[in-house]
Image: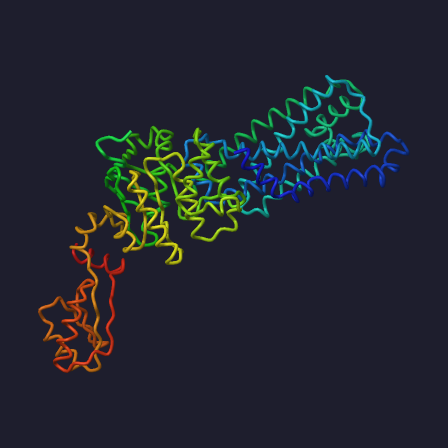
Length: 243
Length: 309
């Protein structure tokens, strides 16, 4: 199943390209265009902002899974898969694994470009491992969320609404600016939403080389959301295919 | 796996969608190594039947045994011995023909998937197109690949849901020939179709599904006795000719159609009989304006069955 989805990805490379271009454009805009104003001339703004950009990339790339799942469901081949002795979740899992593979490639490209732009890590091997672990966990969560939206959407076009969510949320967090500079209600949202601890953890691991105090909330948020999105997806999948 | 030569045993199968009863207490048996055709018009419930038998949807009532396994309790075992080639070709457009076959081989854990795939491509004449994306295939080729994918792993029972609907006559004939060959190798085939001639050509046993129940079943020969056969319709210029002909041909099984001055004589492709009739008419100076062979349609079948009931 994974191989099947990977073949689909490789034959649709323009999707991968779009997934990378958007975050890269944002990176360039924020660091070069806005960076001076936001950071007050701090040359390390790029280090501050990259974790948020990575989260943006992961979310955006994952959102394409919604479309591929939605279009897959409308094809006759799903009936064939369901009448074969394979596990119920394998169709969706194939999509998820291929999406994560695509995501890793996209994220790597963005990080490499950021390095060229001046990004510097101070993380040691242990911090790297934890950071990659958190990132993979987040990738899984967002991908399953994407799958869920793909399943409930009535057409491939409406399946893209999850993309909107994942594009906006990183801005309403500590990804681009410290939360204490965000006014009122928005600050409350930014402080309490799951992306903030995730971004803070990534930041402290990669830039400050310490685990930071947000690791536990990050893991808990991710684990909880993963369970919810996975179960939600399986339930909707069952309902949809029995149409 | 198979008990006493029974591939599929269905008892009291019922299925409703909202308030509409699609299948009402249906019973039938499919023997192994047989081509069983479920004949019915659009909306009769054929696809629902196939979906239930291939584990895609659950029936409301009924006991169903496939390959000796209970459909309700041993679903995965049933899936191991069946294969589905649905109405809308169940093939992956973005992959090549060979990739599609290999994928099925991998999912079914077949140790010799490459050989089987190659063999099937040869049988279906798709070898030269094996490395092209299925997107580029014609309708007939897609159906063939669909069938080939269903054959990976040599399942005991293959379900074909309206396999030739929408195909041009050439592709249809080609597919029929392939299906005939399949049966020789021992696979049981459950076929649904809306075409009487398809059922007659391919099937060893036919069940007619109408309005959610099986109104008639039997071998092709048995059914021919109760359903209308072919006829030749002769059209005349004048009503007087029509009556004269009616008189002359009264020993045949004839029906009159006064509106178009036509006489319908029940007969198969019997050239001698046709020649005799034409000569009789000619010798009596009755000129025929037109004659045409009329094959029974599914509607004719249903009408006859309804009359009988």
